[in-house]
Image (cartoon, rainbow, N blue to C red; front, side, top):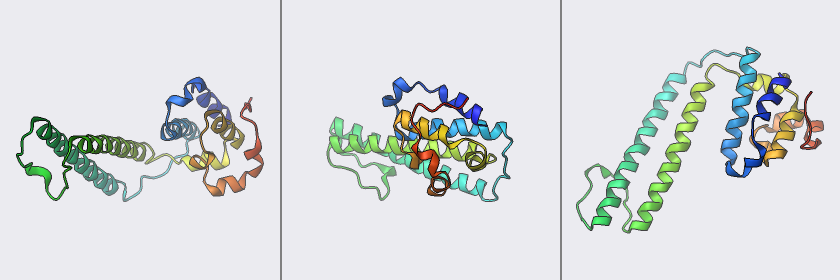
Length: 179
């Protein structure tokens, strides 16, 4: 498990670490962890509420998409000088000027992207137990060293319980390699 994790994390180009957000780095780590969990056959049953939770998330995504369409239509109305009311706006407050509308559109795009990512992660992890390999099979020094290399906060990858379980691993250098 540790060997596979080291191999997977080595695929990351550390020279381009500044081009990634903290969320993208966590996703890369979790993808590597998922490959280890699949290799070790760490499976779990799909939760009973998974389908309902996914439906709720889909409804939230559709709401965000609808709000984005309304904002785009409002933006085009502001650009053209048209004062036509937008039918689908509902109880949504629409900004009065173009700059604020553009900011709102950008915020909605980011929100939609994060929400879609959360849906994808939930779907990918529905039958894979990531915690088992992380706490019992993988050498924590690998994770600590990688987080230090890419400037990722260790709290994003290891919850407090794991950090207290492996305090000795938290002080290793970023040059650590599992061989």
